[in-house]
Length: 280
Image 1 (cartoon, helix red, strand yellow):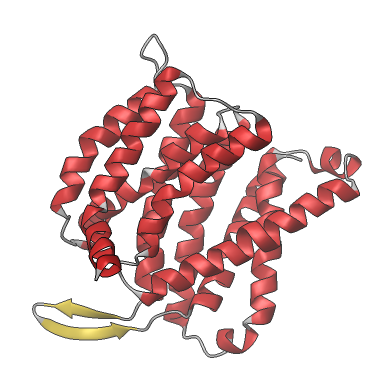
Image 2 (image 1 turned 30 degrees about the horizontal axis):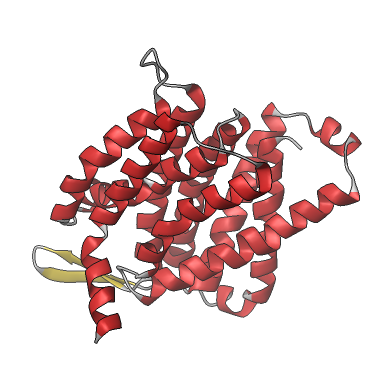
């Protein structure tokens, strides 16, 4: 199945399912809430396009996951650039590890950036921006100008926010797929097995996963869920090894370890709080 058509099918089906489930909540949203959700979906669509093309280029799942996980490093910097939010000091300690790790993962022996890894790095930047915008949309915010509250930006409930964002991704990627990919070949190769994988990806890997993530982000502006998501690339590497027999080269392993260290550093404050609560 063409990669962009797969992403279109996956996100559109997931979004439509959530639209049906959350119809009552959708009917009471304001235009500003719709606008925020659509922008979140638009940015995520760009990230997913680069992500799936990177995966289609043949990059291993383990390497892809570790590069994408670097979005956690980029998020505070993007918040600073676009929204003038303070960057935690841990970010600056984490950046050198992240950059060196990404270099190990993306540079060949001739110090040339490989196309697939570059696509994932660009994807990570868009995913970081998506995470920032998603958190802002999912939380109640007061817009302050010159020390005075000028307006209030109401939070978008997790269910309609996820539904609108996923449908936006499906529509935008679908338009791109229609222009660049051959749908006739996909139709000729259609089978019940292919349908089963698309439905599983749409309803389990997309609708359920992103609703749970958005709900977690709505619980706090600095959700502890982000700390838990640190181990996502580890799970991906283990599953890729068990399912597809993938293995990492020595250079890739060093890069993955460095990226993982950078993520631990940037979230160290939250990790310490969790450890203190667990021991209390």
